[in-house]
Image (cartoon, rainbow over all chains, first blue to last red; front, side, top):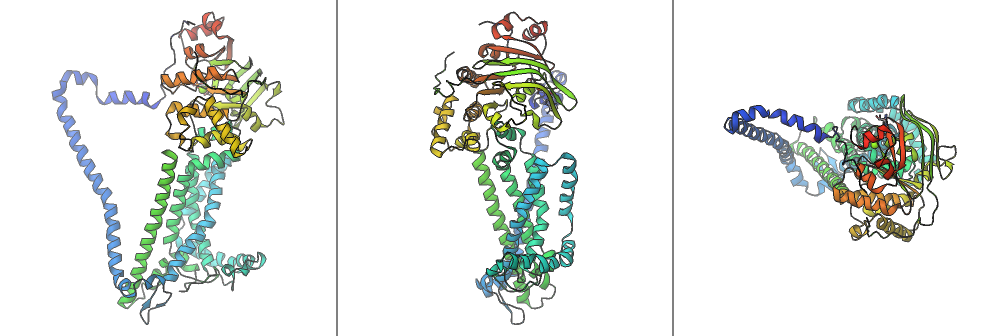
Length: 351
Length: 265
Ligand SMILES: Nc1ncnc2c1ncn2[C@@H]1O[C@H](COP(=O)(O)OP(=O)(O)OP(=O)(O)O)[C@@H](O)[C@H]1O
Ligand SMILES: [Mg+2]
């Protein structure tokens, strides 16, 4: 078969490559180049190489500042905590005694409290935040998306102490009269050791709740952005194969976005681990490990915040520094694990 | 053109796949993208849609599997029938429709999953076959898409590790796994190199024995090579439709001639 027309695929001027070309030729005006020859152009190229090198060195310096600072903090806190760590050894991590008078220190309750409250916060906040993000990115009419997103972002900007105050006056009474009796009696969870005992209000559970509320906007905001960034082609691929809208979201959109969503969860976890003020106001500040989430507890951050100004003996100060050191290490380890998970997910997907 | 494609008898006995379009118009909000399209698409033929950019080819294609109705403000009038059944009628199940009418996009869009999971996606959500049957479906779909030999040793590997042409054929295999009657191809080869393009063309040529194919292309030679009928769209209107050879050698409309001789578009 022969046909009159040549291959007349029309050029697509809208592709980025096509648009990039004029810009490049603007940088090197061809008339000037031909008139002046290579000799005139050499210095400017060399100059730009030098500038490039300076620029790169400067950036390298800034980039190295961050790990250097981290290292510095690590060493300083470690050194200050060393006497306590040295004196109590491994017992510092496992003992529940915290006796400033006798000078006997073990940080186990605070370590457990930190991990437990953060865990509770993640368990509560992740599904809620993900739900909000999915609604906003997939189902929300556009007139609703903007204001709701704005309020979620605003939630992230509320100072921690304000959350704490709100918790003291609203969350704790609610926990005491509503949530805790409901969990314990109505759902009969009181039969398990985890939800038994008197419902005072200030407790590990309450701390987990307030943390959940505090990290929710982070997870939701990141997840929303990540979900919105999923290419339309992914959605359409699933829909065109006969997926319902919901199947397209769970089977194509979320898997595509999961690395980013996990990033949001890590951000929230990082915040939960280090959060101090609001937790201090609701956790009850008791140095004890209890199976029940209704019991008061402690976190590392609130322990330091509460006692640092009152610590007088060297070993007490050193013990608090050691707690800080442990918190620092735990945060690093958790972030490291999370980062490794993200990169493994990414590799799995893009390999 | 003959390609060594092993095609099982899937669909060989099926009669379906006729598309009838009557007075079909489509709007994106206030802009009308399609005007009173009348077109009959015969089963087991390749129909090429050609026309300058923005003339509504994709819009038309995406009306056949109702993918366009998800766009806010989209509206249509007129009728599209698949095997005599109005696809826009009340009670028409979109999910079933989209299983019967597969689609492959211009930019290949495999899921970031394994090759196997990509092909298995459709059957898993629709027919939910037993694992053993699923293996059979995956293999036969990959064979029909002429990709089996290239990937059979690494079905568990990420689909994104394949070359562009392979990814596009994977997308075709993914669509075939639903065992559709109609395959819509929106510029499936426009981003591929000549060799990969040729493979896709050979594939289309093979597949038309089993199903109805509607292909959008900007490449007129490609339309000439692989299609039985060609429809020329211009500014949202169907200007001319006819046997490909006839349309390219003696177009009856002046605008068709202007387009295929490269005077515009
Ligand atoms: N989602 C949308 N919202 C609004 N208008 C749209 C949308 N998609 C397409 N259009 C408009 O509808 C018209 C037809 O577009 P369509 O994508 O169908 O053209 P096409 O023939 O496929 O073009 P191309 O060859 O560039 O792919 C164009 O004017 C386009 O601007
Ligand atoms: Mg198009």
